[in-house]
Length: 128
Image 1 (tube, rainbow, N blue to C red):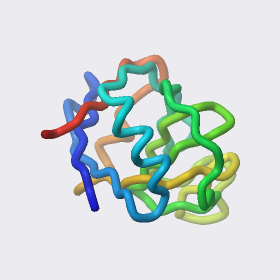
Image 2 (image 1 turned 30 degrees about the vertical axis):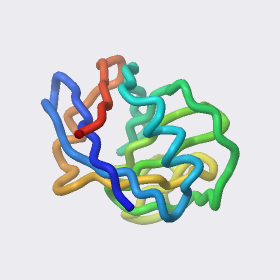
Image 3 (image 1 turned 180 degrees about the vertical axis):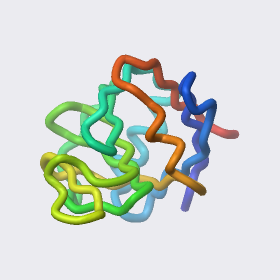
């Protein structure tokens, strides 16, 4: 099952994504229930992350993810958006600093995310 969300920043406007509940259902449900979320962006290579009011343990957590994946990083209570290599990647695929619970995916292109800078405000909301 999927649920649509909208991610907004000043530099990109908005992009759509979906929360997918079949892989990590506890994480997906916790993030969905916490929406809408406002945060401040941190950049780490081609990853955006920001603290959210969710606390979930590892749930089929993984370090290597795909471009466009949305992940939850338990040690930092962070929502992560992966759109390319990070400083610990060994190739073109994104790699998290430590395991994340993948709970969703960007719909469509991810290249516009390269415009987002640390310190920028970000908002994530449900698309009903």
